[in-house]
Every structure is written in structure tokens, then in C-alpha cells.
Amino acid sequence: MHAQELRDKTPEQLREQLTNLKKEQFNLRFQQATGQMENTSRMKAARRDAARVKTILNQKAASAAAE
Image (cartoon, rainbow, N blue to C red; front, side, top):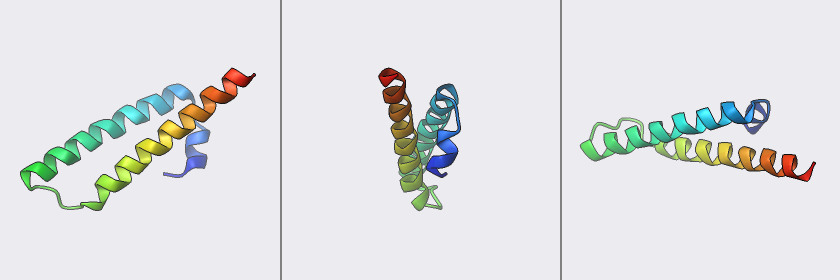
């Protein structure tokens, strides 16, 4: 997921994507705890994607407040 793709989305779409990423993180943690996880690098990617979405949301909120 690239930041430019996220900037093109609306804040509502970003919040929905953040919710989906949080659910994915939960499922990945559950898989790791039960020993079923195959791709351990996906945890790091999901965490970074969620941070990227939060950053874009904060940027959009700051630009809306400045206007």
C-alpha cells in the first residue's frame, strides 16, 4: 500500500481501511499465539499500513482545520 493511494481516498474510506487492518492485526496475533502463522512478516506490514493510514487521516484533519 502506497501513501499516494491513501491520499486519494476519503476520510471515511480510510477509517474503514484502518478498521480492517486492526482486525487483520488481531487475527495475525491470534495465529501467532496458536502457532498457525506462516508469514511472520505480514504482522510488520499490517502494523506499518495501519500507521500509514493514521498518518494520512491526521494530515487530512490538519489541512481541513487550517482552511
